[in-house]
Length: 282
Image (cartoon, rainbow, N blue to C red):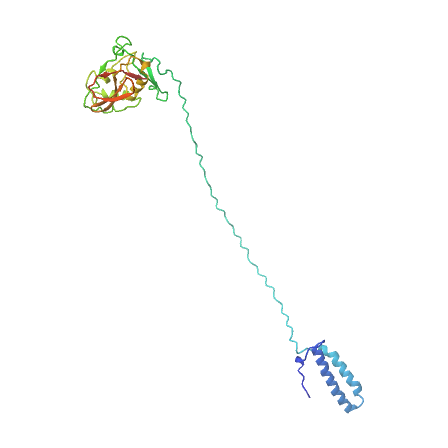
């Protein structure tokens, strides 16, 4: 007998296994027919075709040994439940506090001036300086009239000449020059303890004056004297020479204003006899 490798036969239009199985059964049918013919004679004619037909019918039911069993793999569906993580973000709140800047503008309304430069003053003299921004009581400055030395505005119209006093001595508190400082300078010069003890000096004569019912006269500072120089014509009665101020330059120098021609201020020695014109503020 012979063996057939049914798994390595070439493929045909039908199933390879069916053909091989049919061929196998056909061979088996021939063998059986041959055996029947020897055994029973005429039975081979009937049995052989039946065996062949049975092989053809049963062939499709035979499992093809060349085909690997089909394994059906069912993939298990895995459901993964992912916990939902809820993240709460708290927004940082920044509060900016803006402080309003309040600008306070103070408007000062000045009182109208009751006197103008050149007007007659309350004590019979002449107003030579007006500043309404100054404190009440020092807004107006009045120069004594010509002839003041006898306590009237008549008689001898020539201003007297006096020394400044205390030669070589610096008077503490009498160095100020600004408008409004003549009174403090005068008070320092005549101070009984630290001032100048000399009598009949310019500052003392001015301080002792009583004129027009007023006794608050003083020797002007150098800046106050300069304002008088600027309006000397309106005031009247000035001599063309030097006039003492109450400003102390120290030791051997005291300030004086020249009342002739162009502006001139000098430091005069205290023993010089210069003219004197008292003033007051109100």
